[in-house]
Length: 334
Image 1: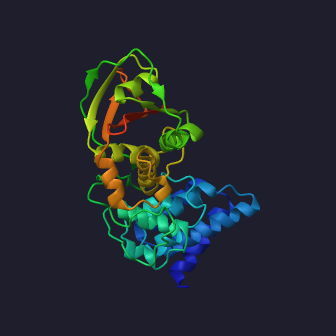
Image 2: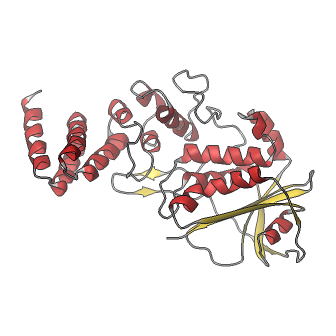
C-alpha cells in the first residue's frame, strides 16, 4: 500500500468510526472523480463491516456499490454483481453494469450463476451477440443470446451517478371502437392469464398496482368488454411493439417496487407470448416457432378513453384462426 492509499485509509476509517454518512458520501464522490476504484472498493467493504458494530452506514456502502458497477473499469464493476447487492440502487446492478460495460469487460471477473448470466442477458438486449459463449450459464432465463430479427429495440434504462431514466416505448395514436354489450364466453386457461398478469407482478406485489387479464371466445373487442369496459380506444400494432411494451412493464418496478431489469423484462414478454401461443410446454421455445406463432396473432394496444397517469400496460391479442382473444389491464400509481 503506497502513502496515498495509507492516507486514504486513515481518512475513510476516521469517517467510518464517527458514523459520518455525509462525509463518506463526499468521499465517494472524490474517489470517483479521482478514479480511485480500489480505494472505493475498500470504503464499501469497511462500511459493510461497520454494520456489525451498529453503525448504520449501509447507504454509503450501497452508493459505493452502485458507482463501482456504473463507472469503474470492468474488473471492479463485476465484483459488485453478487447475490443481494444493489438492493437500494436505482436498478439491478447487472443492468447498471451492463449499461456502461461490454460483456468482455465484465466476464472475466463475474461470478458463475444467475447474477453473471443476468449481466450477459442485459448485454444481449443492448445488441451484443453472445451466441455460443460458454461463459454464460445457459440455464438462466433460457432465452436466445442474441436478439431475433422480429424482436423490437427494447426501451433501455439510462443510469447516471445520481439519477436514472426508464423511457417507455413510443406511444401510438388510437381510435375509438364500439364494444359489444353482451358478455363473451370466458376461456378457462389460468396459465395464460397468470403469464399476462405476472408482467406487472412488481407493480401488484411491491407497489400500488393492480392487474387483470381475461381470455374469451371472440375478438379483442369481446375481450375488452369482458374486462368491464363500455368504451375504449384501440390500435393494432406489430408484434415488436407489443413485445416492447410487455418487456417494459416486466422490467419496471412501477411507482414503488424494485426494478427487475430489461433482461427480466424480455423474459416476461417471451413467456407471455409463448403462453398465448400455447407453446410454454416447449420451453425454451425455438425462436423460429415463436416467430411463426406470433405471425398468426393480431396485437393491439388500448385505453379506456380516459387520461392515463402513472404506469400502465393495456394490451390485447387475438388469434383469428382459433377464434379467441386475450386482454390485459395493468396500472400503478404513485
